[in-house]
Amino acid sequence: MAWEIIFPQTEEPKRIENFLKKRFPIGYVRKLFRKKAVRLNGRRSSPQELARPGDRVQLFIPFEKQAHKGKKEASRIALDILFEDDNFMVINKPAGIAVHEGKEILKADSLLGMLEAAYRLRGVIPRLVHRIDKETSGLLVVAKRDDVAKELERQFEEGEVDKEYLTLVVGRLHPKEGSIAFPLPGRDGRPVKALTFYKVQKEFSGATLVRVRIETGRMHQIRLHFAKLGHPVVMDDEHGDFAFNKQFRKTHSLKRQFLHASMIAFEYRGKKWKWTAPLPDDLARTLKSLESR
Image: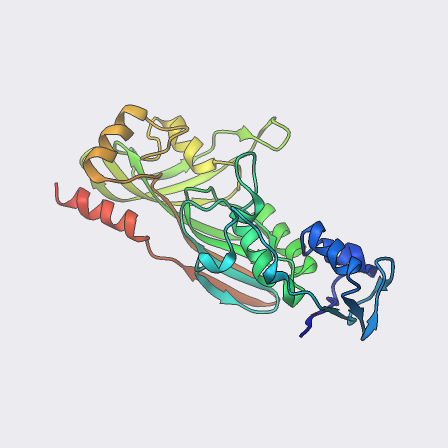
């Protein structure tokens, strides 16, 4: 039995070897050609042959039988996909999963790596158009085509996407509604504009639940802005109040920062889209614990 991939209409023609290397580990691709297990439009293919949009690529060695010790398989984590069409998908990401690889995170263990593994046999390469922190839960948009990725990235960069978060911060905010405009480091390290709007939702003893909207998307923007105000995000292990966090964890059993991407909305191809994601169980339990005291 052969696995078949249709060369995407959105990609430029390229050598079939390079096309496959974007989707599979190099060792597996080399084995395919060594065993003469690649067909292009029904004919045996060499690595140098050119593949074009619409071409059929068949693989006669199943990828699933290759060993990947120590890596998480996409099937081991049930991804909560709220919406999907041919252009993009919207995922309700759980806390604890990084969106992409890093110094201490293998690509296979990242959300992007899991998606690539799940979609490679469909000829789809998922593309991140924005990011949320590893320990932040909530909504994430992932494009399925290059042209869609470019358009959505532009919308995110130019502030055309509405994004709301729910966060719990230390202490009580005054005023209860306002904005934070401290500049933050940009990609080159230089200060750039950063604008955060907030509105208090509920006050507890020692902490406040806040609904937040960000007009810009700087790294750690919400966490840095509230830390700058002197009201850091509860359980933020990098910019937070460490003594407060230690006691809070002991009292309420929360193990990660209280930050959740709860709403996202944008317009695409003349249609308005909007999704919401309720608080995950750990954050909902934390609020109940606060209310009981």
